[in-house]
Image 1: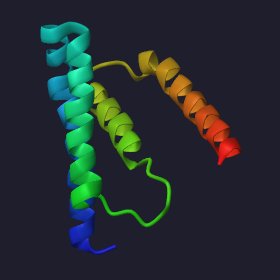
Image 2: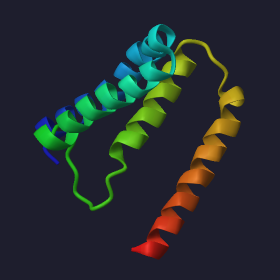
Image 3: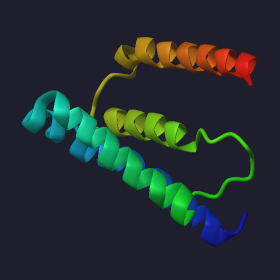
Image 4: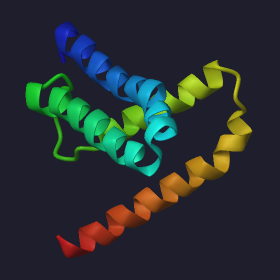
Length: 111
């Protein structure tokens, strides 16, 4: 991977959790449940288009889990940086890992 692709991949991965942390809560606060749907459509849709349509994130494999990793690690790093407790996040992290593994296993049985 070249230096340009590294920078582009980092920037593409940074944009997603940054927009989630900056915009999602405000949309939900202002528009309630509809704000969550708007955030899902605009934030996820826009960053997916940038990362995969424009090609900001470089991918060498077949599995497209890059934005999930970016959101997970980016939001976790942001929470720890802002002073939140990693211990309080562990149940959520464990459930996400178990749920993702179970979902991947179930999906693999159908494909």
